[in-house]
Amino acid sequence: MTNPKEYEDIPGTFVFDADRSRQGYHLNMFCISLRLQESRDAFKADPEAYLAQYPMTEEQAQAVRDRAWNGMLELGGNIYYTAKLAANDGITFQELAAKMTNMGSEDYRKMMFDGGRSIEGNRSKSEWKDK
Amino acid sequence: MAKITAGVGCSHVPAIGVAMDTNITDQDYWKPVFAGFEKSQEWMKDNKPDVIFLVYNDHCTAFSAEIIPTFALGCAAEFHPADEGWGPRPVPVVKGHQRLASHIAQSVILDEFDLTIMNKMEVDHGLTVPLSVMFGEVDEWPCPVIPLAVNVVQYPPPTGNRCYNLGKAIRRAVDSYDENINVMIFGTGGMSHQLQAERAGLINPEFDKRFLDLLTEDPVTGSQISHLEYMREAGSEGIEMVMWYVMRGALNDDVEEIHRHYHVPASNTAVGHIILENR
Image (cartoon, rainbow over all chains, first blue to last red; front, side, top):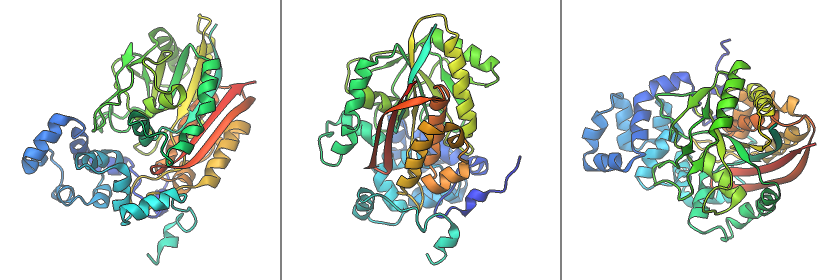
């Protein structure tokens, strides 16, 4: 059963499917390594040497250097992995979400407090044409 | 014989654990989240289970990208809280129930659900936050726990229908266990939320309400909610609500809804909680 990827129509979303998982494997393995303090220490001491241990693409490595949070997702990263890199940087999950939506942390927090992002106008890429 | 008496559905937002661990539950932001669990903690005291079967997902903590089992059953003697990048949660070690877990593994696999057996596994907030909100702060968890970790991180997770039928197989396994014990089953995760990319922050209370209504009253219909509908309507991470259907499948068709709690937000997520007793 091979359905077309209907989920690619959801706007502002990178569904972490088997293709993205394959593409992002080394990027994600780098991110999860930062779960442990000794890895965080080694990464902090020499970021380039640490990054070089993971055979990701140069584009992915640059996205890590730039902390291009959406870029990492587009290149096969998954949010639960990239959140480990964010935690390493002292960024909370909510601050990370704010960065990915290009909103300030305060505006994002207020949006969530007021009930979150509405589903209306956010179901399909056809509704985001003007963005 | 053993029996399943009740099911609990519950969000497992990590920030809820952090709020408890840092003693800020009485802040205005958190008060309404925790108020909804006061009745639940009383109910847990009155209906203390001998074992909890807890369905949850790991968030790239115990499982890396190297191994991604769809269903992984915790058969170890104990499960330590994992370091998720900011130190392990300061909560008790989770004790397993090895004899019942082995029985369930054997029964369910012969029932054609191909589980992965975990004889060593750390557990993250997905498992410990539901225990914390239902039991409060305790020196040790009041009963053993059998974890079932479900892949909902890499698409596709198991379908709601598959989860519902697995719940029925777990029910058959528990029903055939030779000790007179009371087993409670937890389905965790959700509710609507999206943590990633430009659509992060999505919340859909109408979807969540319909999900809870169907869960109680018409689970056969609810179990057919498609992955596309979950992701589009409840956010890319909202898809983890399929795990509530393992819980629902293990209960009677006819259940009584004892308690429901819904609040927006906790961090990026809609918090949902339900208690169902077999009729």
